[in-house]
Length: 246
Image (cartoon, rainbow, N blue to C red; front, side):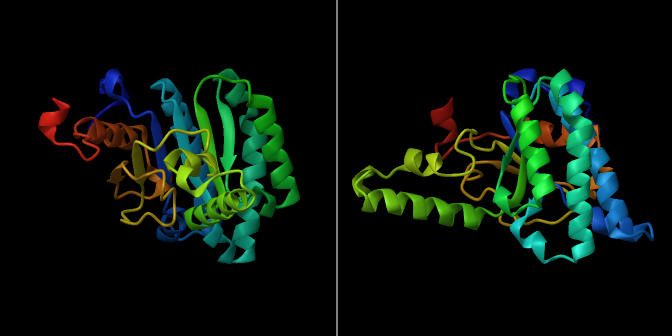
């Protein structure tokens, strides 16, 4: 097993994204309701954020609630929104003490008013923090994000604000929810599933992918360390050959 202290501080990913999967199945294994899994998943979020601060990670993005999750039973959605509000209230002090800036991406206006209000209040109170940026993907879907970007760019082309010839990656990036975030370096998914599930499809173009066979409530500091160690042992070529890199 690898510990966080053993990681090469000079080869850390700048931006880590996590698909936090398996809360419901974790609870089911224990004969509990799915709500029990989500409640324990919140504890893992807190521990993971604290561990990422310890290793001085710059950006952490968590897939918190997808556009597809609105299809789940109302009782589960209500519980998730309640946990979001209560967690934000509890963690504001932690964010301030650890210099964490809270950010959020997705269709935030579709969130319940109370959750939206609490989210924006915490974001406003932490916006001057200069340490790690913690981004919550809420009511987020990558296809929806790309569709919105295409619409915005098309409107600007139509109004002669942008010319078709000038559309490049920089223009596209500037119209995404993540316009102020760097591309993802390492994407981790828990629960043993090997899917991206409509998460940051543009931003993970050159990310290293790591899948771990534990449900999110059981994701520990050692699992985090092993994911980052795997990243550090890989050669990132970005289309080049090894010889070109050397």
